Length: 433
Image (cartoon, rainbow, N blue to C red):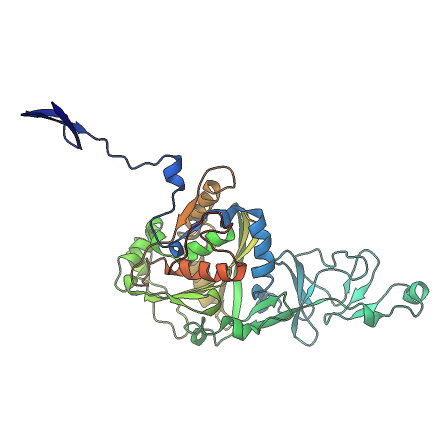
């Protein structure tokens, strides 16, 4: 007797036919994976997934500080946050440096390392203030807002003619003001200009930023996650399933799935524009104040590498700036901006619109923060055996395509000289042809 065993989803049965006995056994349908299967390379091109170690490894983070953050233009603040001569703001640069941004008597904005050249003490401790003279509390050395040393206490007695004030000015940081009045800094003295760095990435927004803007809202969130995961959340809209408000006012509305990603040099990307139907959400209403040149309900979003997002939505410009504190912790600064020419009524409308969607207790932002917080928990180094993150959706570069993330990690890989899908060179994954 020859016994054949067949696996099927039916109940077990035995059929005898001459020399053959056929046994049909129900096979359990398995969707979960064991440890070996969990670690297997995804059945996707290597450009369509990344190794989770790029989010958790300390060595990789230190390299990012040097190869990415210390080479790229980064937003430190907005010019409206320094309205008067001698106003300053301190900025913890994602590369690790402490910087002070100050408006001089000549109204020019400049940036310096927040460090005294005498004994390396911090010069300004308060996050904001006004200082005609920047004086070190340690030994009373003073500097002006152009970075010149203007006084060395008992200088002649201590140094005679061996050291003079001209020898000990502050270390200036390359800076520029642009693209909506934001103050940008670059640690690399030999970097390209800000205009060259941004290129055409903000082309869709520039016609809407030809008036003076003003910050009316600022808050920050400290999240136990990696800064790149925050970028990913801003870059893809597949996660609109998490936002009931976005599904009702956007996803089910005409034009939502027509939005297309456009990738630009240096890792920047945009996701097109559409019209939001605010009144589709019960209790919400159309915005009473718009934005110059923007269609009613208009929405434009642009990501600037490595961690800044312009988000213009109907009546408010929101700016996100991600400042990593380590591989598993990031500070995200949120700014809401309106027009400097706003009437009190217009400003009140913009504040209401902003807080309804993007305030700390709004209908959108807290859900995004919860999402990346959960990723941070799951990917904590050595806490789990997570291995891969998928960026494999392809929908003709439209809104639920994950091409924006693939574009970002291509730039990341180029700058880091590591493959995002094989950062340590130990996965032995062949590159896509």
